[in-house]
Length: 66
Image (cartoon, rainbow, N blue to C red):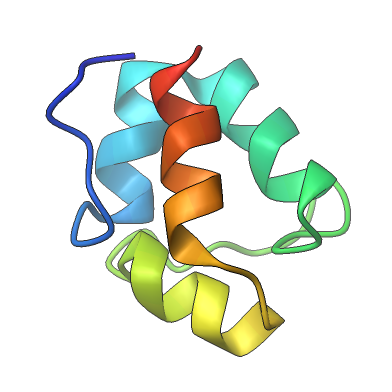
């Protein structure tokens, strides 16, 4: 995934970059529970991580590694 991804990136932007990989990372960290779960594509990675109680920096690094 592009190195420009940050905690302010929306889930929609991340999904456009790499849908399968993004869904896998979000699932790994408990941000979504299955590929059929509704995702607010306007929500930032930071906000999604706060809701899930996950460190946004760790998730961003995992997304950058895709």
